[in-house]
Length: 437
Ligand code: NAD
Image 1: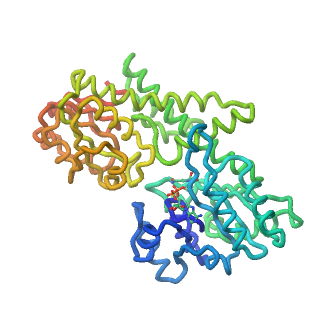
Image 2: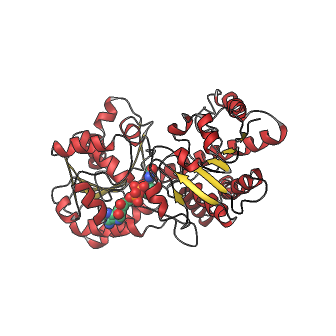
Image 3: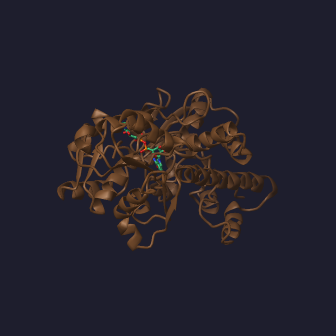
């Protein structure tokens, strides 16, 4: 497994749990040192136990030497990052192609090279070209196996997926038979639980991942717009969402309004898809609108907070509950909190923040004089307004009376709808949430 980040570490550990011998190759010395010392460099529920039990069983090891890791490998997975390339919205494939080059140099014959990273259509073929060019002596297969796990629920998502997508290049002499057999062997435990395994060509697999993420981003954006409409015309967005979601063609999940989607996937994948589609002369206008609406929403959220605080935040204290893009992760990549807090800071607010897992990663990304607090009540202490940015369960359980007495003011902007408007008003708050009366 090349790359020991959220995807590489979780999938590597899960393949080991399925019985494979896995070496995760990670080039970041800090992460590698942690892994070799038995520490998990990211926060993902259950991952520590899964990793340690597989390390103890001798099925999972870590290293930085790809050549050594591949000396006996049947398959190698590329699970490196594909962030947005500066300037044009396309996915930056530098890490993928660098990994392909390293793999080519270390490869032995009959290797299966699988791309797990989210990559534009055509990347699998380019990986094959790099391998062929570097090592004309080898026979090898390439496959695309995009990952659909969600941070915070990653192990369960990997172990009990809605589906597994595998694109196989069938242009070789055995028409991909060996590659398919190896993939089926790796995923056998999932076949045993009847998880659908969708076999496609490379391009279809690559596009399916972007299509799925773009659709989900659109679903979130749609409900966000409906929530805005509820605020103008009346109606409760949760009942609207429930009423919509009971229609099985729509489905009830991913219909929660909020401050705009963020995270390490939706923003970059929607941008990449629109760039791919524009280049191909088949622009995806729904996705383009989604990207624009979501960007504007985050700034709009900051303005909404400022308005609730009486039109100015100059010298006021704002308590922030939650920083990560969603609960149960420490991932701060493109979290909605980042542009929102930047704007509040610019408006003169004193920011007191608390997040159970995200504060370490946030320090590098937030304005310098932000105060990092040890719990939610400390973040709310003497605050004029408290803002909920991530729906961590621990915030749901906060006692409104204690929250009220910690604060100086009584304004709450709950951008995740974690509390009951009635209860919060009874507790004396000027409570505003998203899309609810
Ligand atoms: P990440 O940044 O957490 O991890 C990537 C890791 O690869 C880093 O630790 C980096 O040091 C390492 N790396 C890069 N080049 C390397 C090399 N040549 N050799 C060894 N290690 C190398 O990224 P991630 O969140 O795990 O995402 C990886 C890919 O999976 C992306 O394409 C992403 O879009 C996709 N994906 C992510 C998620 C998610 O929830 N994070 C879900 C599905 C798909």
